[in-house]
Every structure is written in structure tokens, then in C-alpha cells.
Image 1 (cartoon, rainbow, N blue to C red):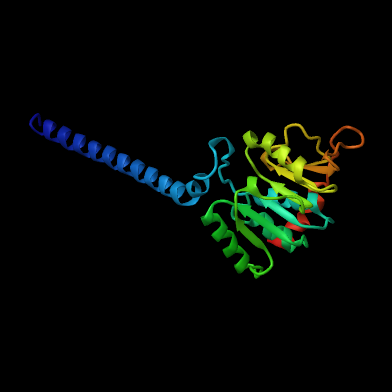
Image 2: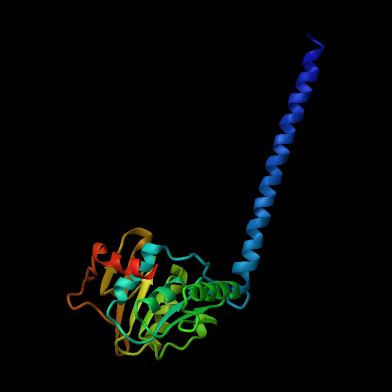
Length: 229
């Protein structure tokens, strides 16, 4: 009995080491996969952009898209999505009647994915996706702008929007509000919250009462999402 115990202990220790080795291999494989995704999908768009202006890609949820559309309902004129990612907001806006609808995205892989989605939806000849740095895009003919960007770049974006947008334009910001502008409408809660800002002349509009105006209730905006999905 005593002679068997060391052998059993050695076998158990060997199995335990094998399990640890497998765990390390799995972790290393996952890390390599994550790096590959970063290198192929995200990094190409960042190489030309200063670190302080870089914005990681996080796709908009179905609820966020719904809220953007509810704040642009009934409007006309050119619609652009700055940092359009896989193009879902641009495609949905086009399907809701906002024409032309244009997306600007620096990452070539995401631009290709957006064009694929448009082709599958039968809209490849109607919506436009351009591989271009959003900071170099002229907004002088844009009347509807959507942005889902990081808080760190929003102060700089405010300056660009105020300098370039025409009177009557509307800006819709998802996830995070513009830091100094007063919203005229707000929809949603938490990360699904979306803010709308109207431009009059040389700067952002302030609601007539000086306070944000509650936008279209969620229950009335869900029909929009059903028509575009």
C-alpha cells in the first residue's frame, strides 16, 4: 500500500501539471486571437490618427440605432455618420428615407463590412461608405450628423461641428453627450441614451426653456426599428 502511494501521487501531480499547461496554452491562444482581431480590424484605422484622436470601434446596438432614427424622424437633407463602423446606422437611416446617407470610417475592414451589409440589403448602389478620417471630412453640406465617439474627442468634435455645420443641422450623439452643448432632445437610458442638438447660425441651439426637452417616447419609436431590420 505504501509503495503505491508515491506512484499515485506522481500520477496525480503529472495530471495536474498537464491541466495547468493546457490552461496556459488556451490563454495564450485566446490572447493571440484577440491580437489578430486588433491587428486586422482595428489597428489599420489608427495608424494615421494621433493617439488623442483615436476612437475604438464598438458597434451600435439595435436600441441605439432605433433612438438615433427617432431623433432624425421627419428630417431631410444629407445624413452622415462620423466613424460609421460596420455601417448599420447609415443603412438604417437610408431605409427610413434619409437621402443621401453617407458613412465615414478610417478602418478598411469595417468599410468593406459595411458595403457587404448594404449589398445584402439591396442598397449597395444607394448608400455610400468612404474610407476617410472623420477629422478631414467637410460637414458644410450636412444637415444630419450622427456620432458614437469616445468622450475624450468630443470637445474637439464640438469645435468642428460648430465651425462647419450649416444652420438648421441636427447632431445626434450616442452613448455620451457633447460636453458643452445643450441638447434639445434626449432618448433612452444608460448606454442606450442618445442626445440631439440643433445648430442655428454659428453655434449649437439651446432649448427655448433652457432645459433639455424629452424626445419621442420609446414606445412610439419601436416601429421604426421594425421597418429597417
